[in-house]
Amino acid sequence: MAPRDFIIHPSDYDLERVVADIHEIRRWNKQRFEMEQLTAIVHEDLSRGLCVGYKDLGPDEFWIRGHFPGVPLMPGVLMCEAAAQLSSYFSTRYNLLDAAVVGFGGLEEVRFREPVRPGNRLVIAVERVRVRPKAMIVCRFQGLVRESIVVDGVIKGVPLPIDALASADKAAM
Image 1 (cartoon, helix red, strand yellow):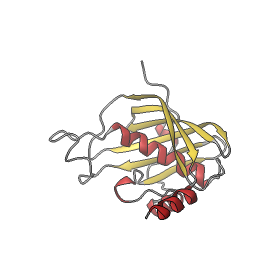
Image 2 (cartoon, rainbow, N blue to C red):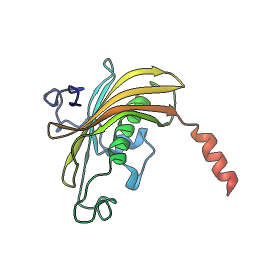
Image 3 (spheres, one colour):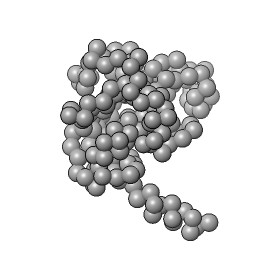
Image 4 (cartoon, rainbow, N blue to C red):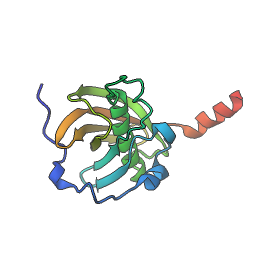
């Protein structure tokens, strides 16, 4: 199956025009340390439900040593996680889901088309397909390296009851 058309053509955003750096992303996303899979946000279009960000892959990514020794390839699940974090950032920042924290709800039609390696910049675009406030957001996503689509699919986000989860965790201690 051939890759779909671009969600947004690379000529329609500027990777040098950062609209949200890692500190701004952290205001909206809870992931930290190794689980942070976004470096910056470079494009937001609320009317189209569109957001573009990227992850710069350095030589010290936690997965390099083991996936795979001598031939490091970014795990597909981390590409999907990067898309989930971008969707979560956009959903939470603009209160699309009416939720303080958005969690992974599912994936559909995901295709990995080319390897992503240390030194690459993985550019991710997400586009809202539909939203049911307090229930679910569905987005198309694409990951690009240079102008090649390396991954694409559909991602779903759901509200997480973070307060209830935190309370249950404290009670278990």
